[in-house]
Image (cartoon, rainbow, N blue to C red; front, side):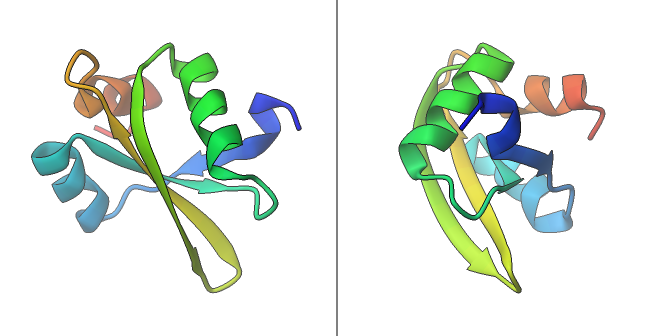
Length: 85
């Protein structure tokens, strides 16, 4: 599975903004067949950022990935580049 196929879009909700500011995390809607390792690899390739951990959550037929970034790459910078902020 290609990196561009794994990540569908970022999620911009109140919770995602709060997580971005407090825990340096972003939430992405991902392909339901993607594993945590594939998600981590795709995020690192697409955004040139170091990923610390990936947690997944299935909600109403959507798979969401909670991606925690390292301190060197603030999630706010990535969100700004994506147009979320």
